[in-house]
Image (cartoon, rainbow, N blue to C red):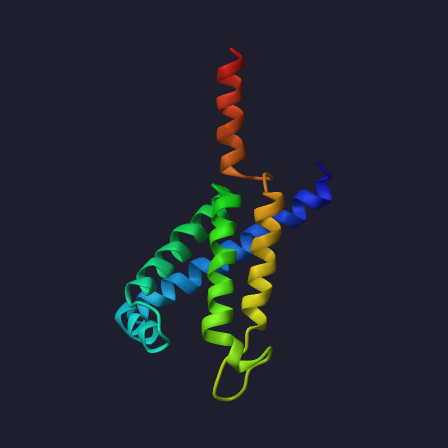
Amino acid sequence: MNKKYEVSLLLIRLVLGISFLVHGVVKFQSGIGNIAGWFESIGLPGFAAYVVAIIEVAGGIALILGLGTRLVSTLFALLMIGAIVKAKWAGGFLGSPQMAGYELDLAFFVMALALAIAGSSLLSLGSLLSAGNSKRADA
C-alpha cells in the first residue's frame, strides 16, 4: 500500500482514537449517572450511556494501539449516526446557542467510516500480532 496513504490513515486513527478516548473519560469524570439521565431525557435507555462510554474508552485505546481498527471504527461510525440522529440533528450543522450542531459528529463519522473501509496497519499492534502469527504458521 502507498506509504502516504498509510501515514494518512495512521493520523486519522490516532486522532479519532484520542478523541473518543477523551470523550469517554469525560463521560465518567462528569458523572456517568448524569449522562444516563440525559440519555433517558432524549428517549434512550439510561444504561446506553454506560455502553457508549465504555465503547469510547476501550475503542479509543484500541484505535490508538491499532487493535481491531475496522471493528472499532464501525462501532464508532454507528455511535455517530445515533448521536447525529437522536441528539444533534435538530441543532443543525453548526448548532445554535441552545443546541450543539452535528459538524464534529459528522467529521468523526467520516473518519471512522474511512478506517472501517480501509483499515490502518502502519504502527499497528494488530499488524504486528498478525505478522507474528503468519510467521509461526509458515514455520
